[in-house]
Every structure is written in C-alpha cells, then in structure tokens.
Image 1 (cartoon, rainbow, N blue to C red):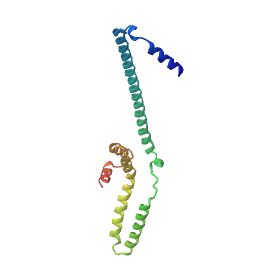
Image 2 (image 1 turned 180 degrees about the vertical axis):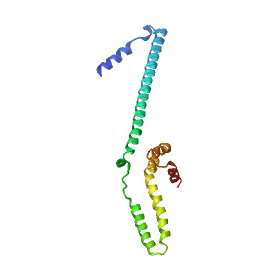
Image 3 (image 1 turned 90 degrees about the horizontal axis):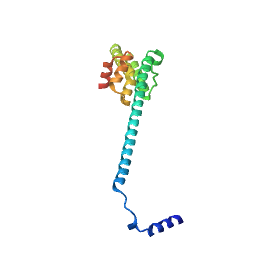
Image 4 (image 1 turned 120 degrees about the vertical axis):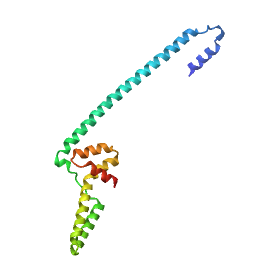
Length: 167
C-alpha cells in the first residue's frame, strides 16, 4: 500500500507536456493485431467445439442403432419378451367384478349370451394389455413411428395399436 502511494506521487509530479505523444500508426497496428488474433482464437475455438459436438452426435447415433439392434435381438427371446404383469389395484377390482358377473351369469338362463360378451371383453382387455407398454412409450415421448416399428418387430399389429390410440 505504501508503494502505491509513492507511485501515485511520482506520477502526479510528472509534467505530461514534456512527454512525447504515442505514434497513432503504431497504436492502431497494436489494436488491429489484438483484434485479429482474438478473432482467430474465437473462430478456432468455435470450430473445435463444433467438431467435438459432431463427434459426440455420431457416437450417439451409433449407440442408438446398437440399442435398436439389441432390442430386436431381445424381443426374439421369449423369456425376455413377455412383460411381467404387476396387478394394479384397479385391475384387481375389475377382475373381482368380472368374477361376480360370471357367477351371476351362470345362475341366469341366458348364460350363453353373457359368456359371449365376457369373452369379447376379456379378449379386448388382453389385446389392450399387450399394447399397454407401447402406450406408455408414446406417453413418455417416443415417436409413434418408432413405436409402430417396435410393435411390428414383436409380431403384433400396428393397426390394432392405432385403434387403441383412438379410444
């Protein structure tokens, strides 16, 4: 701090009229050189950043293609392909109601008509349960075309999926 005070006193004692002016051409050359080297540095930096981003994008595309192939291979294995169904509370209530309907329909004279209706509802519910995970994929944000491709790879009907999506 004391040295700063001494420097400030020395600068204050200097007569600025006796000091020669800086050459304008030389100052302009220094400024131009500084601007030119700074712009070159920034351009090179941006170029390297873009190259690295493109490199990572190619890596991500390769990983994505590998994942698609892996999913296709895994879907061909029956043990892995069958989704494990965890019963939800709503489903257990629906199953209890269906069981009650079956017992009531057996007691009625029109049991055959009720059985046919029950079979159609169970068929539609099993079809819908096959497509539930694909519906979740769409809800998460997977493009519909990719989901339809996955459905076709698993041997299911993409048109049926369209019908379920409309409901």
